[in-house]
Image (cartoon, rainbow, N blue to C red; front, top):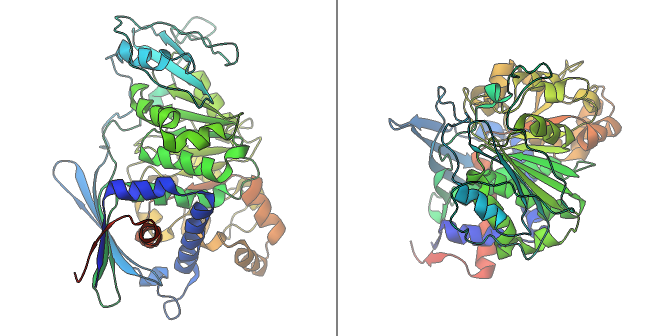
Length: 486
């Protein structure tokens, strides 16, 4: 039996080549897999939840964790094995550092007039930056000249400017308690998984061996895009993090609904840490059609080093129609009142939390999760869903054991619904009507414009489904190494 081998570079090349129709095809196949997982029975559906082998997490002494994720779908069996570093429960991973970001980093972002940067020194002489990047196909980041100090770059009139503040003081002159006290949570460690996905035939023979690094980030973003496609408004997107997960969430959002998106706000622990992402968006050829297709599209970058972070982060969260949190946080990444008080509840949002995957890790404050299940959600998602929503999860069993937001909020199984139950709306509607809900009208209103919180810790069946689709595209495009008679 032939064995197809794909490196991470080859997997990445295939995924970057996908057009909108191909992404939607991948998404539909994933929806079918998740629907089988959530609604199938052991007797009738191979890929149902009860037929899934348990995954195993093995902690290593150096802070690394290896995950063994076996899975079965109606089409294949396989296992993903990945290793990754996790933020320590005691690690203040998003704390303000006394060390400054080098002035050369500011120069890199300000050396091209098409990429204006707003930056200022705060009271500790640490570079504070927020960049607002207008859509430009000619944008490039040139090598900076050597400088010894960071300077304030004034954006052109076409770019809205925010005034930097060197210190945080209240009206009475006293220092205000910064939101950073509870936001010191983004990890400074590389938590990108490294490993492989092996696909097996019914008789146990391997027929594919794929790198799982980029595949994992893509399949997570693909699952997040399921409800993203159902939202009535995606005008403003706020993304926490600047790693591979953030990269693919932004890319898929633009591929699927780029003409409707006007603002993409990226929030990261450091300005320098997000530089790679911004370079790729603004200089790499594979992003050219996405950054130029919509003349109204704007990107902004906000780091914790910026003097007015506390004010602007509140704006980014409140203005957002969609929030993607893609960080391995151990503390909430923004105060809950941004979304839970009367001002924060004026509009519905799709809040997608995919970065944390262990009980001690948490991106959303428990109050946000509790709000999503109240009031009146005694029996699943059926009643008043459009008013307050429900916590949607990829796997109820996995999230009950591994999702810090779910565990710390004290959410029960009755207050969650799996994405596979809702992804196929017609079938979900029938189930809701049987339970006395509002049927199609109520469910669609909630999915389109209500408060939808989606929590994912990842499942092996997602990898298998995307891996199968990758093989098909790779075969058509001649990508991969084929070992005959393996």
